[in-house]
Image (cartoon, rainbow, N blue to C red; front, side, top):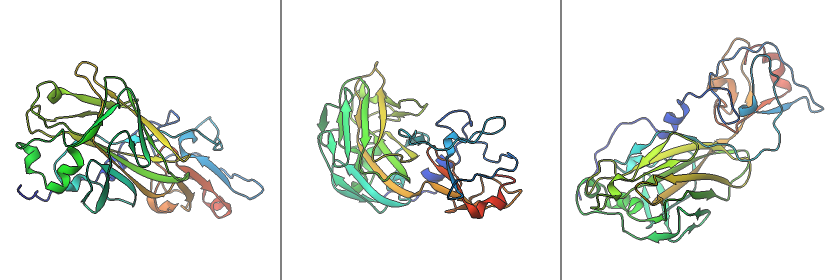
Amino acid sequence: MTPEPIRNRTSPLKQIMNTKLPLNSSSHLVGLSRTIGRFIAKTKANMRLFSAAALTVGAAALAPMAASAQSAILWGPATTISGSADVTNSGTAVYAYAGAATTNNGVAFTAVSGTTWGHVSLSGGGFSGYAGNAFAFNGGTFATLSNAYTKVIASGAYGGDATGVVTLNGLNPGEQYLVQIWLNDSRNNATTEQRTETIAGTSVTLKYNSTGVAGGVGQYAVGIFAATSTNETFLLSPNPTTGSGQLNAISVRDVGSAIKTWVGTSGTSWGTATDWNPASAPTIPGDSVLFDAASTANLATV
């Protein structure tokens, strides 16, 4: 196999952070520069914690964050597999699983089979079996990938045309996580070459074979969320016309605290990273905003 070329690209994390969503539901936040007038939140500890997803502007009040169910995952676009640099290495590793042990872009994947992948459980009609090295092809784009990367996408769990359930376990509430998934079927089969799978509740649809020919490769997507419990679930819905569900590999990474403390001054922007501690604006569903005693002089514009 020939070495993969080095490509310049926007990182999956930046793609997600650049996604614009309306501030109108429990799972969306955008339009980050909002003037809301002076507001001081006081409790016995002179601080208050708010869910970024529950923060509303205008006539509505700022609602305190309640003990909540799982937050929505904000997914980036479906992206065609091209090389080991696809594998995002932002933050720190939590776990990564594929059909064979391999390391790509500094991310170590643990070999798995079946429908229980360490801290990840696969259930529902979309996942009923596992096929080792079944989705490879000795030719086409697949054959140009490094051996290390083909190990990520050559095997996978599969099932019928019902929705598959993916549950991420072992999470720490209050932390932000990246989750990356891969779908691939490079076989020489006219039916499998047309298969797709949609992340339920989103417009993100991944192709198993992006070119629809033998040796073509599939796609991956990266999502980000703030954990509100020790587990997080998402659904994969295969196209019922072309058949079964599938998941080839998954990686989960911790990218820091989901609690952001306002440290900005009057007239600055909600969406400016340096106005927050840690230096990252609360753009992710499930992020929490903390106004403490030191913030109260700086709340004219948030």
